[in-house]
Amino acid sequence: MQALGHIAETLQDSQYTHGFRVDSSQGIYHFDCSGMVHYVLGKASPIAREASRYGLKGRPLARDYYRVIVRSSSDAPRSGWLQIDRVADIQPGDVIAWLKPKVLKKSTNTGHVAFAVLPPVAVPDSPGAYLLRVADASSLHHDDDTREGRDGFGMGTILLLTDSDGRPIEYGWVGLRWRTFETRIAIGRVI
Image (cartoon, rainbow, N blue to C red; front, side):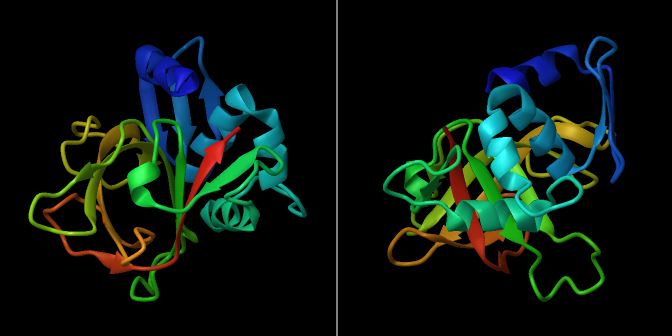
């Protein structure tokens, strides 16, 4: 959370790009969602960052964060990660990663990855639905988004729907204001 706060406090220029350029002294943050997570983990947990790179030549993508979280245990930390099973148990700083839904065929992205910045809030009269405030890097805005006319780093609200055990199974990019997408979703706590 401290590393995310530093980005928010120093931000002067942000851009969503599959490249990577960061100069925190100038407030420049150009990256995509996985580049942002890679950068933040480098500041907060080098062990978790290295575990995310296992077997990769380049930096991890959203699908790689999903995989490292799913390989982690929910009983004890493994390589800097602890898997969180239930959406209701998300804490600020947890990582949410999902694979690209099959319905989004034209997208070249592998999925999406973000940090929770507040605990989830249950949606009244909608069992298994939670609104979640996240920090990410994106070209698209979430509900109540801080990007205001730009892309790149920002914070906004998404929706997570759960199964009967409280595990995430669908996400809504713009909170309650847009459709949801079913896909595989993982939640990880960086230790």
